Image 1 (tube, helix red, strand yellow):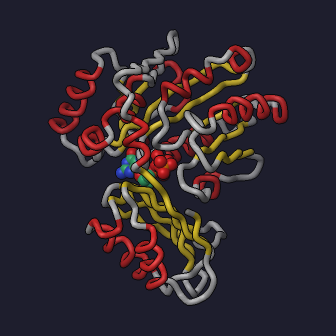
Image 2 (cartoon, helix red, strand yellow; image 1 turned 90 degrees about the vertical axis):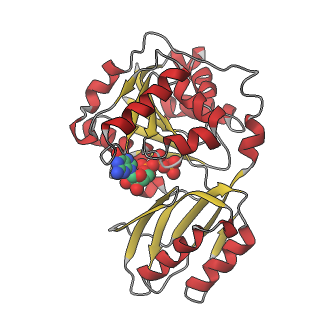
Length: 315
Ligand SMILES: Nc1nc2c(ncn2[C@@H]2O[C@H](COP(=O)(O)OP(=O)(O)OP(=O)(O)O)[C@@H](O)[C@H]2O)c(=O)[nH]1
């Protein structure tokens, strides 16, 4: 049987970071990663790629809804074409986990794969913001996970963590929650933490009927193949995001190449920007996800900071 790991979680929660730890822990296994990104250009593939690792990107839709059939067929094709020991799936940050659980419960898939982990990564810093803004489908990811793994807890005090746990227990007192410094987590032990005896599959039709409505508000725009002068120009872009002129920007990520050829990787999650040097050889790619995005204004903003020349817009 092929091990199947589903690593779910809201936008920017830490799914890719956790998957990198899986790839390290299981480096001797033949692994295929299925990446479903909400943005129109793939960023995560560049972040996790390494020799011998097969990465399948599913773009232009969400595997829990518009690409449901595609997702099921992709898993079966991966099984046939690669016969791996492990398949790791990263759904988009706005995927309904209940739908994904329903797809992987399909008999054809169950005949070939066994679920090894079904995890939702929960961004502790942004929990109360997101549960307020995206309650219904955010809750769906929490209620259907066999393990909720808190990320970004290092700078929170015990009181703040207790508040999150209390709130989670109000959703469902049986939620299985793990709060541990990620550096001390044994990835191979997560399987036993996952309590996989039952798949929960909680999709309360009546409760989630407004999800399509709130999902429709979230959109994305991406830009690629341009250069900026230096990293200060990158900061300029994100300083502009603080006011709502460009929409409510929840998540942005990518790489930026400067005129001197230096590459930076950046992550922007709900107002916090993180930039580091990158040794990945790539052109600039920036993916922006948010509510009510002002795409034309964003194009103008990029035009102000990029160096003249061609660039591509993915909208
Ligand atoms: N401080 C801290 N930062 C984290 C932790 N986990 C992830 N991050 C940071 O959060 C940002 C987003 O992490 P990713 O792993 O890309 O998140 P993701 O869920 O894959 O994001 P999307 O695929 O865009 O939804 C990055 O800057 C990470 O370095 C954590 O436990 N602590």
